[in-house]
Length: 131
Image 1: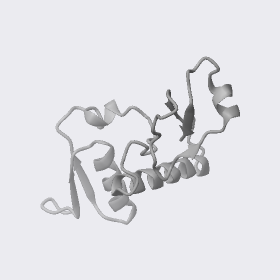
Image 2 (image 1 turned 120 degrees about the vertical axis):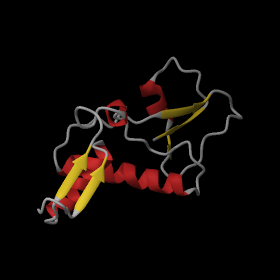
Image 3 (image 1 turned 180 degrees about the horizontal axis):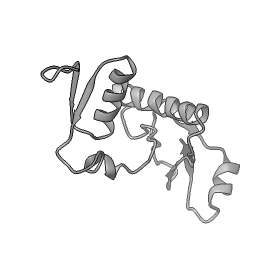
Image 4 (image 1 turned 180 degrees about the vertical axis):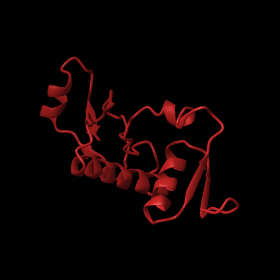
């Protein structure tokens, strides 16, 4: 690296900036990451909830639902492949009346009666989906 030039300059050392920097560095580029804080990943990246979202609240045919469902599947595959500790707890979405509408997204499966009973017998539930 000369004193005046670098192949890639990444501004921001959060999770996205560091992933971009890692990608370029792995391909042999000289990379500098500029971060205004005292350490990397200390602002927004440090507030990640750790939830792998299923996209169940997006409109069924929206790009958000499509990409979120695909990203969900791929994230679990990645965690499995590289032994990243994770828990897939799932989510029940319940209708508490017989006319209650369930969300219709591509990533939901309709829960059967046994799975609802196993989940919580005290629920006042008429129908449910599981993600």
